[in-house]
Amino acid sequence: MAVWMEYEQFRKQIEEGADIEARAPCPAESDAGGSTPYWVANYPIEFEVEAENAALPARVDVAIIGSGITGAVVAYELSRQKPNLNVAVLEARGICTGATGRNGGHVSRPETYDMRYLAQFFGDDEAIRLRRLPILTRDMLLQTVEDIGAGGKVDLQLGGTYNIFGSQEERQDNENDMAYAKRIGMPIESYIMSGDELSQRIGVEADTAMYGAAVLEKFGSFYPRKFVAELFAHSLKRMPNLSLHSHTPVSSVTQDENGIEYTVGTSEGSIKARAVVHATNAWASHLIPSLQGSNGVFGVKCHVISVHPTSPDHKQFKCGFGYDRMWHWGIRRPGCGPLIYGWSGTEKIADYDDSTIVTQEEAYKTMFDFLHKVLPSPPSTRPSGERGSWISI
Image 1: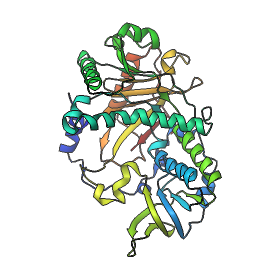
Image 2: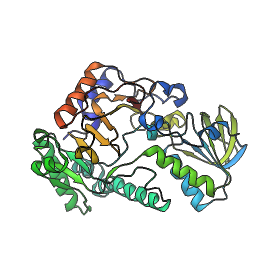
Image 3: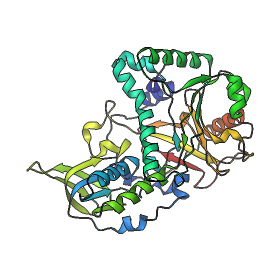
Image 4: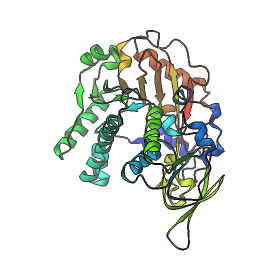
């Protein structure tokens, strides 16, 4: 049983000098214009111009750094619980153009993978907590979508996610992890589906489906950037003193001598805040040096493509799928939209430049060979243009 950092791909990168101990740069240092994701290119947020031109307040109760899904959820919860607060959201680049605007759009995660490994290192209770977190997050996401009436606005599809096994060894590992999880009292939603049923149900090629899959029924995909826009829109309506500030990178956060306030330094000047929320994901160590290094938070660069299959209405694409320990993953956009697909073989440790796409022909060949192997109606050409290929950190 190998876990993520034990794979040869990542061990080799570290041996060859990938500096996971380094502090993350400021996101604004990377011009993301050369790698525009499908999600950003196809959905402009209506208040983006207002956010870019908003005057920075001198003092707020809460400063939120980052405008992805974490920052948006914090703003939403504050607007729901404390609507009279003064809150500023500070974003280094455009609203929701970081990881939330660059991901795969999937609402899924294998449920019990590496369960025994986690229990060995952290204990049973912590292993259960870690593996239940995606399920609880899914439930909170669906509840919030219902609360704000956004089901039809965020392209939510719950057609299930099929984590297709790439080998008998992977299937056996999954079965053993699932049995262990049940034995220690973890509630399980997923179940194992045979290869024949898998091929019949979602149309994946029989040779690929032969080992079956772990199935999660109440999962699927959505449009992350639309969800963030809806959260901010509802928050702005409820909280009169909430302001969004895009293209306002934060350079420092220091606690004042009085211990009551923080001074947040930005490209537009300083702002005083009683509380600061860091919603910066892989970039966290840029402002919190204690989080840098192998025991903290470091970024991983991932390549995602958007391609159109030759058969636009094939049932395969109405669900989410992963293959070979989720090394390959994809979703199909509704309305005969493109396939959003990623392969972990392109991932680079501690590389924070999301301004350029992967150019290696070998990587594209591997990705398209996989699609032709797995899908009855694979895409006929590689992606082209800024909407067809992008980088996420």
